[in-house]
Amino acid sequence: MTQTLTRRGFLRSAGVLGLSIAAAGLAAPYYARGASSQLRIVSNPGLENATLNALMDELGYFRQFGVNALIAEIPGATGPFNAIAAGDGDLCMVSGYNLVLSRIARGANVKIVGAGMKKCALTVFARPECIHALADLKGKTVAVGPARGLLHSLMLQLMKEKGIDATQVNFVDKGSNDECHEAVVKGEVDACCSSISHLNDRDGLVVLDDANMWQALPQCIFQTAYASNSAIRDKHEGMVAVMAAYGALYEFLMSPASRDALFEARKRTQKKFDMASAQAIWTFNETQRPYSKDLSLTDDNIGYLQDMYIGLGTLQQKQPFDAVADMSAANAAAKLHA
Image (cartoon, rainbow, N blue to C red):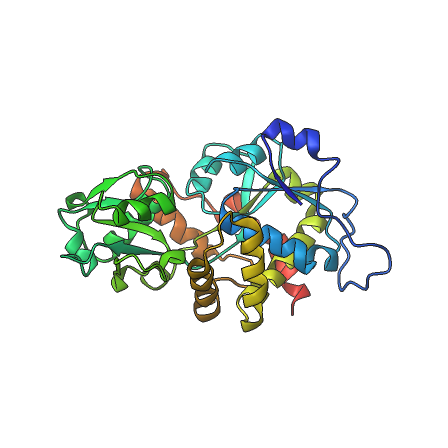
């Protein structure tokens, strides 16, 4: 079960909501010895996260791996991290928050513990009149959301790696991912960075193939998972079970068999079901395989992110891998799938 909660509301509701261990008698390949200690998992309330939460509930992976957890949806890009840093949550499994490393460097008692979606599910959509490639964005207005937010940061990194001067592009904040896309459709801007969920939209826009970030930024981890240091220390077995469950879910999402389940989950979580969007997500998952059932990250993965954010000016210096990341639960979970 999920519910949109404030941090204080999370604590009030923790005793009555949750996805918990299965009823007695279920034959499970792994049973968390820490299952009696409930994990507080936080996420943003967007459609994609809500879809994952619905699928996790419907497919029973938490029950299979003996997970005792409460999932709470906390609004705002910074909401899940703030809740964990304040001690009001334990673990965030799916986050596109781009200041995780910066907040850790400033003293937050949090570490990166793995990955959600590893490949960047973003591209650039543009009005077709005079934009056909990234280089054509010079002198144009591009919607990216807040300055130095995730969309803006990834666009700056993309242009840097393509050797394009980003100072010649007028980046503007048009709000969320979907709002940036809508701004191009309405003619308010020339182009935008937005989700692959719009790839099937019949809106007259073109996709800049050299801006497909899952191809153009292959080393960039799109979504990290992070946890409080206290959860890593005190709820390790529970974290192993949760990460094994998500690994199983991700493997399923990348299989042909996932289509009907994904569509049904989106129908339950989206006010007005968008068939084209659902098809785009499912096709991307199956063809590009952006996830991995092994959620662990390497020193090189973390190093790339640190170098990127140092270059963008949001991180001051590199820290040792062990100072910012702990893959012990992810590594243990991966062994359960071997």
